[in-house]
Length: 555
Image (cartoon, helix red, strand yellow):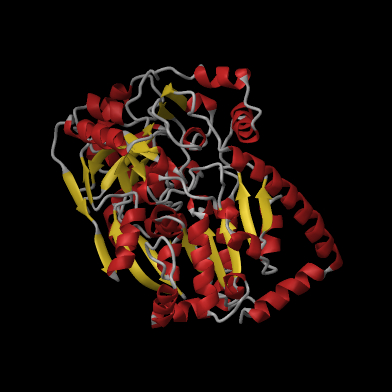
């Protein structure tokens, strides 16, 4: 099933289980559905099974949203207490669409508790009180864990799942793995057809890279991760720069955000630290999982500047993690979206895409750990296996059996809704759903396509054409100097900024330094800045080197 097929089915208001292999676009499809709902005046309740997953979708945990908290079971008095809390009762009664992300990590017991609370508060015997429920996840990933570390039942084993009877939407496209061979191996692990040939390909990657300095290490245990990151940071000479997290909102929601935020409350960095971006910021040029090295701290703002693996220099300014409800921000934290990344746990790597990783599966102890670790990577060549055991790639047999049922169910749904689409009935279901949810058939103005406007690069170019200096552009646009340099690079690449214009922008001292910088770069393509910076012993800042590189590319 394609993402568009799944989206069109969701628009009918059907209860659904959206699944697919890692990189198939589950989050992208959910985000598209949320935008469509809001565009028609319907505000969905966006939740997830864990704090980390909740930050990825901009929501709160299902435990907090439903009011069940950390309970293991619900008594009659518990139900009465939850339904008596006015703010919880109000949001549960007001909701019309409930999205639960990473449902694979939600136990069947917890799902049943959410069902009971919704029936009680909404005074309805229908499953989940009559809400449209969209469950999102992949059961091949890490399973649910109950208190005491014991495995709990899967969500699909719950009577509440059966009562909900969700339509399975199995996405079959692939947007992460770029290596056909590697993609086939991962699919074989899921289907149980993983053989000696596949194992040979994986075991052949039990090699050390030539330079492992900026490649993250994935471990199964927190202790290994904390030890390596602490040791690596301490081994770097130079001053430490610390960034403290700023928070606002209700304490319980703040704590939930903190648990889900991959950036620590106190982020300590040094020049030379290996880091990973923890949020998506396409405008700035990075995504959750982008790796880099801290090269300097911007003079004006103090923000860290990183050099990515592909040679780009990006200033990382603080971003927000929020919990929204009914269009209002209930809680917020602000932090620089980075974390030390010499090592990370496999659990916290979920949701990221990596170009390369050193993975230690020698102490793998849980179903799905090996699969999750491998599926973070885009290519087999990016895998460096530090060790593994015979259970590392084990998949829970119940999950594999259930997955076959999910695939069959999805195929049947595609046929049925294809016929509804052809007959025009699907569009009628969509209209009925919007009306029943209190939405509007016409898209609201604030979500309609915006009129064409100048891009951020055009705005910078317009100021330069008015004769503004780089410093004046930085001040007028309220952007960092590094960001403006990035704009110059993009404009030059597009042929919109001439060599003469560039020469007028940079300081005369930098023009005179071009031969020295070119000599330090040697015969290399001058793609990476760090070697040149070190060779010149820090004589020029990274932004000056970027400007020099830009000028030299014009000659």
